[in-house]
Image (cartoon, rainbow, N blue to C red):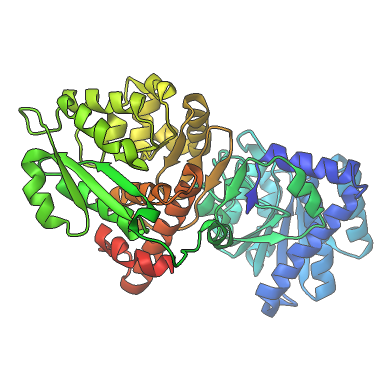
Length: 512
């Protein structure tokens, strides 16, 4: 599903009006009527009771006037609180204000804390609040009476329907601009906005409903939209059928380079993850002293014992053996449980530069890149990196909180700059590719924040690449299915206590 930032939505609106001749009043009418229909469907039992609609002086406020008009016609007692002077309302917004007035609709101007307090009792007795103060164009922190109103709405502890986007939220990145309405439902226009699909915006949007405002489908399809929300339909279309006349060699060979003393579980999780999504063969490259342990632990996965350093981690001298082994393999997964000690880092950096097969770099493989990120530009093969926010922060030399504040921007910027696919893990995982496309994944839950789940994901991406999927498709499929598996486990067992092997066990069912 395509999603947009505020600038792209503005361009779509302008093109609908200019290129297709759809009057702005028509779009506003469709928007307001659509929100009113959602309210009637979900809150029809409140007919005859008071609904308070807070409208700004801009187009979002115009939508609010239309909502009020249709609610009156549907039997609700709707009152609009205009957060501006009437003389400041112009254009299409004023047209809808005038229509509402002629219908006998109640419109109250609220321009100060005093006027807000004066009408506070009536608002307090409302059964539902509609937020139409700010739309997608907001870019600066909310101040003055608008902020007072937003904070007042949140203190009411009532159900709130936000028109297009909760007021106070940045539509492009989900950042709270000073203060933000906490909605029960966000009725968003035509196409979802990025800000209501990423954190912290998700916490303010509530349930998202899409309102059809008559935006031409061809216009949306023709627009070069860089962002997409992964969904079941798009993932199902990517999955390839399995033909009868095949064998294990038909589904590729994954080489996983992982593990060290005390971290053999990470290596096992990644290796089995690749097999669970259908890779035909998986070989784990492991320090030779750990080979007996892993040979017993892993039944279906083969092992390749490799030279190690005095400290028991992989030695740089393992390069020649690895390079020879991977010549006829489909993908190399590097990092889970590997450590980032000197010889390991040297080995990883050379493999990044010289590998001719795609690489999936996770965990300690990513840590080996810190301070040497420029080496990614020297790679001969496609690369997928799978950092969590802390690892991403180390790669770009900022605090993790800065990464979390702009997940899409940082992931996309790094992908473009370094010509790699970035899978930035976390709630609403972001997948960014070098040419500018960015995907957001809605599956997954907090129960997956546990050791080993990231290792499983790295193996899954490698497993799909081995089967012939393009690295960006492999990443999207793996991330979506990984989260879906976690959701299925949570449905059956609850979120608390999920472990990575629960996800591994259920992967075939979820894929089926």
